[in-house]
Image (cartoon, rainbow, N blue to C red):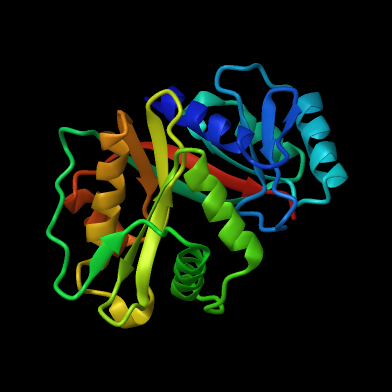
Amino acid sequence: MDARIQQSVVSNLSGRPAPIRSGPFILGIDPATESPGINYATPIPGAPISAADVSAMVTAFCDAQRKPRLEYVVSTAPDLERLLLEAGFTIEERHEYLICLPETLSVPPTPDGFVLREPSTDDDRAAMSAAQHEAFGGTPEASAADVARMSRLQSRGGVAVMAVTPDGACAGGGQAVPPSDGVSEVAGIAVPPAYRRRGVAAAFTADITSRLFNRGAEIAWLEASGPDSWRIYERIGYQPTGMRLYISMP
């Protein structure tokens, strides 16, 4: 399972607007943003990696004017962490990822007063992006790049779902990348403070996952940001499966 999840990350980063292949690494570069959460690298599962490969990968990041950073499933490159630490990288976080299969998914009812739907206009995409920024502690505003990124994800076969109130406000949303070899990552699950603890996150996470399976995906996976989200995801059928590492060069 770890290899399938890691290969899905490789495929996802390869779909960035300006991906870079550097030896055994794929750098997912998006010229529209400098965000390290979007511009990062990952190793190709099973590929041999040397200190020289790590050095070349850092140079590729510098040439692209982006911070050297990686996210990857630990077991698929067991010696890489040591090489990165020796090269001056610093561990950010370790996360246990969770997977959901069609037979384990449990879709709860949509909470009263909310409608779940895919954003179909740029105004919808802007509203959902702004809600996500607010939920993650940022300014509740969306850039043209945010809108374009979501539109591109949808056009490539990804899924985006937003929760909408009766007065048309966006109460949060999330998305899933286009499936690769039957695997897709669910990410960006976000609910602004005013709408939390009403079952909204569970409802649209399950809805995103259901849409993925209806389109032929076999495995959905995600990461939990804390105990509360962990409980939400387990309740709808996600189960912990493996470990991922976030690591970057200061």
